[in-house]
Image (tube, rainbow, N blue to C red):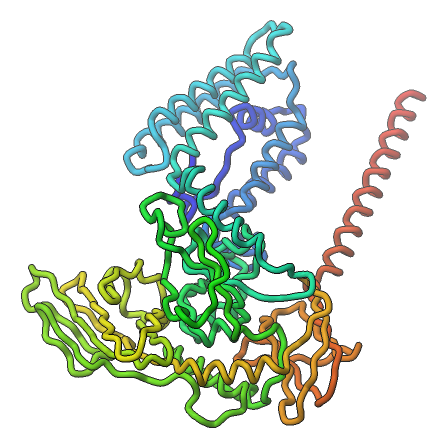
Length: 596
């Protein structure tokens, strides 16, 4: 049995069925099997069991990275091991001695008694599952005690084993409340209907952002390049960079759901998928799975089409996968919990510019408190209810200047448990889980349009950590993006592991910048020769090259793949040699016995 809690922090997921457990007991208690064999098998079994209880061994099994969810996921090895042990001795003629029967019944009684008294504490095991499981165990054991086994015995055993497997599978699946098939199909159908209309990637490379999400792996299912993912093997630099630019992240995931015009351009997000808001109450629809809205793109990104309640728009300021930039980007530094400043710094460094950049700080014109004192300075203010039994809110107002969107930053000390946010009277979806300061995109409104942000307290007091307002000047940004686009890579061919194209490096640039993470396995070739790569912002792959026309190729190969292949081939050859040696030894033994 298994459930959602077990997926996150539970014990190892093991199920092999009663037949295997009964026969494994026979294996370890059958004296005709050499004691040395049983001892070695017992040691291997003990090691596997300890590995599922001792975290350092679990990490070793998991490639020296701690598994996120599905703890002790290598437990399938233990299941296979038990099946292999049972398969090495089982036959329809298998019989048990009375000491073996008494021993296994004593163990069964002890296990059942232990589980029964713990049932109130085990939310993944019901009394029905326990007693049905015990019944299957006893019936299968009884079948092995029958003195006469006719033609019906094997079919009956097959039915028993299959029945137990089916019951356990259904019982386990009923413990999950993930989503229905309809919910899954609603979103996937809508997603695929849009993504299949995207331009071919054979001679192109671009990424796609979205304002709705079923999982952080939507891009994998929709077959497009995104910027969100969930994996236990996530490189820490991915999380570090997302934290720097104000996106929700963790040790095992990154979630691009609060992008800005700058990060969209910088990461090559050429397209944006947004929900139309239709059918928001129907489970599984894009509107039902909406996250932070990208109202900052209104009037800036050009709408392409609307399909199945998804609007696809194009970002004409998206940078190519590689482009010429200023070497000043090599020395750019980041400030912790200051994502808008970090974006501005990196953007300006790529241009080699010394002015303030397209992003500036903005002020609220008015702060109005309800059941609390409105602070004179919002950032870092402490809000406290006057009457703890009544609701309280802080209303913040500002006027749009008509030249670009605004963004609200929210510190890690402010969570969805603390506040809820309304923008112009519209409820913002839940604030994403975050451990660094993140960004909430605000509308790109007309000039002098009154904008209102209402923060409602869910607790008696709240600290508005890093709650600040910023403005992005669209005209300045578009001019700068166009400047970087002029010297971009013209792709001639593109696959998931190889991108080739040509680029003209102007005098004064010097840096071939890419939007490719500097992960181990990537190599860069300029005019047919491999060049040393460097990191920009401790994340992007780049290289310093001279001016002029160049042919550039980016290649990715799995790190240490060659060593893995050599090791695998060597082990196969060893096993073939060992099998041949054992076979030859058996033939000689049979021949010697025949001669004697």
